[in-house]
Image (cartoon, rainbow, N blue to C red; front, side):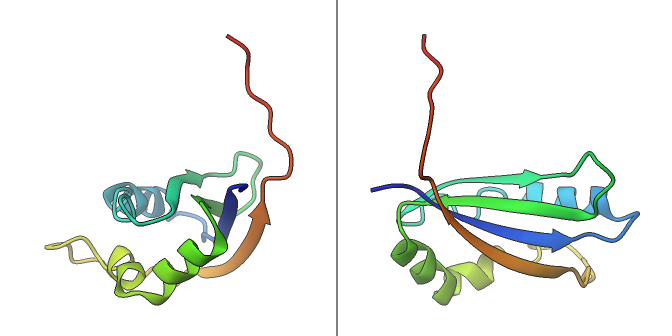
Length: 107
């Protein structure tokens, strides 16, 4: 089986990038331990774009869909307990990929 990649492309208005990064860092482990979850990265653009990428890797589509339809997904997106965060009102678009070719560096 090949890894399934889910990319949430979020549009981040100028001036709030550090807040977005901080909030993601605070929740980085929220999905760990979920069946089929393989990893998470937040990609910040360096070329003047305002579209950040939330890249997650899953064993298969079923694992992702099960997480997304469960209460775990809603819980992972809640503010950290005790935080008084206001919504950032980010727009997002979900992209779906599978790894078709991979290369590993030789030791």
